[in-house]
Length: 593
Image (cartoon, rainbow, N blue to C red; front, side, top):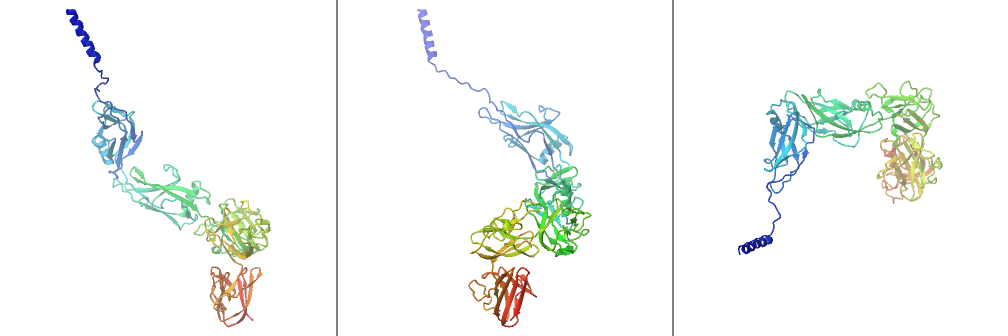
């Protein structure tokens, strides 16, 4: 009976435990804490605390350590001497927000005071190792490995400062490389020393764009022995510095960057920004000599045009009168020995075509008097004296795009240095360009040059090489075309109707130049730029106009010489007159019949 009762009880217990639900979880006995890493500053950072900027911020930062469940960690910055151990730190400071933030922010003064409290002397550099510890009460983890940092305590210092000018720009600044009277002015914000007794001094540093200011191309000390926050440097000095730094080709723009370094005692600091500066040394060239219109007067020397396709080369279209002593090249309108530091070039003795700057002779062996294109390659010391001409080429002309057929029928006439005029028949709807030789140019200094319209411009500007063709502005017929290089930096062309009219109160049409005024006397063209008209005139004044409806191209003049836009011409008494105009030789005559 007792056994039955025992077996019954055992069975009951077994059934009870067999029916109980088993719970498969365990309660955590503590929080876990994930690893984390330093963000800044990087390993081997070097900081020099600046006594002139005590409120400037320095920041340590790191990623967050992820808690195991819910307890957020707190953080502590620890640092020790490089020869010590982080287990016995020199500094131990909670992060921002009472240890809750993943940053620790000091002012430079606060960090300096913390080091001073540890007996680090003024201006002394201390090498430290550092890390960040995170704890959530149950567990503590640390960033690893420990990082190195070198901090120099405050001693001397200079305040932050900005550059004022020249402002940062990639647009070239054009300078005359020979001028000692033109200046580039550098200015910057004054920087104040941290130690008043040690005045701030400045040095301007220049590097090639993207270069390292620790190894500058060249430097300048500011005015007043480095004490002023400004410096004026003459153009020649800058050019000479560039040449000494290896930039010997003056025709090529130089891309630089510049900044200013301020020094007080042993403390050095550069400006907050770096400025771009592109310098183009404008090499000028002039033609002078007894065979030229300027004669030997350097002040009247004729400006030459810079060859767009051959940097360092210059050319000019000019009438030369042989036998008057020849010609030379000058880079200023002044003979050497003057304030402009000029140089002159002539022929290397015994080798025509070769130029020399020393022991040279005048260039005389070019041929007979006439119109020439004179070119000077300063880089390679070569010169060329070739036929000077200009003509129209293109499908708008009878020659088409075939240069050998341009001259003489479609050639223009030189009316003054670097200026041609001519009359050419052009067909409507077609295009044309200028060319100065009987073949397309090969890009060489001695080769032909062609000129077209500057792309995107509508003001008559023309240029060599990559340019648009010009179009015919009206119906098929004769057109006056002008190639004008008198402004050597801005070549221009003009195209007008091949006509000339008299306008003014001396004529029956008066000063009304409108297209519909049939009373304006029309002149008759006889070739070679010559026009004639015989007409009745009243006492009064008149001018020549090229096109009815426009004052853009008109001649006045005096004493038998015409001038673009010149004075009105006077008719003293009424009568029948023969008026003659010579556009090529720039003359006029008034004869009463």
